[in-house]
Amino acid sequence: MTQANPEILAASLTPLDNNQSIDKQRFADHVQHLLDNGCNGVLLFGTTGEANSFTVFERQAALESLLKSGIPPATLMVGTGCCALPDTLALTRHALEHGVHRAVVLPPFYYKTATDDGLYDTFAALIDQVGDPALRVYLYHFPKMAVVGFSSELIARLVAKFPEQIAGIKDSTGNREHTEMLNARFPSLKVYAGSEMFLLDYLRAGGIGCISATMNLTARLAATVCDHSNHADAEQYQAQLSAVRALFERYPVIGALKGLLASHTGHAGWQNVRVPLSRLPVDQVVELRHELSELNFPIQYG
Image (cartoon, rainbow, N blue to C red; front, side, top):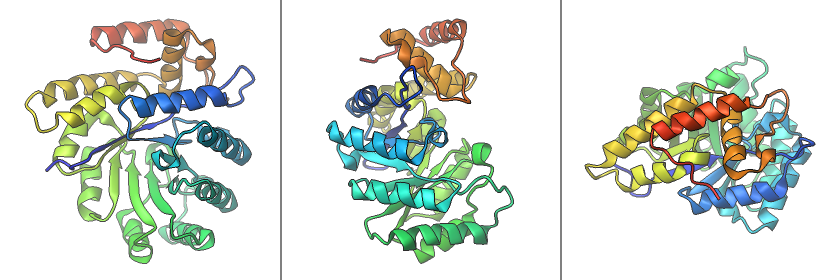
């Protein structure tokens, strides 16, 4: 059964100027564009937002600037997970102080042999030391990137101890069966798929929706899938959405998205990425645009 109010969220890109500093005006414009074009909300400083390439201060200053521009805090999630617990605490407290209650938190990911006990102690310390009942933690499970992840047993322990604060999971395994297992096992949590590839099937299985990198460009189409999820024509929209997502997965996604926005808008600054990432070469951007046109997928931006 499809969720009554499915949620589509973009894992936002972070635009940079030519000095590799966050372009705060373009950031605000981009987040507003996402909210105006199919997204129920926006995740800031996730993997797509190059979060771990920025300092705590840069991330805090960028959030403050977004909120000053008029972006409603209730529409935002903020990635706050760092290797050092004090950094995670600082980012999470800062978000809460500015009215953003939803924190998407990676496990501390440098030490790959971290045990469930160590990860439990980390999240218990985060929740206890923040000490704010308004905090809502979304566990960010992305083992392909972080290697360290959340076992079902660890999630169950955290939910049992902190039933109000542990609010959901962003499951970026890209594995439909795993996402549906989490959704069935933890009915109190909002379990978001990390890919649009199986959005329709997940919605029809009772899933809440998706938080995705490619929603920076596919949000309108994904919203159409949601709107038509109980109609016969939903399959054709999902087929196009899946094909577009599969195409992006053949490229470095952050560079591809930024390169397309630079090409489409004429704002060359969009192609900038923070080192150690690299821009997508121009010839590959041209190739990607051609392949998208063959899928009858228009870039609708600005």
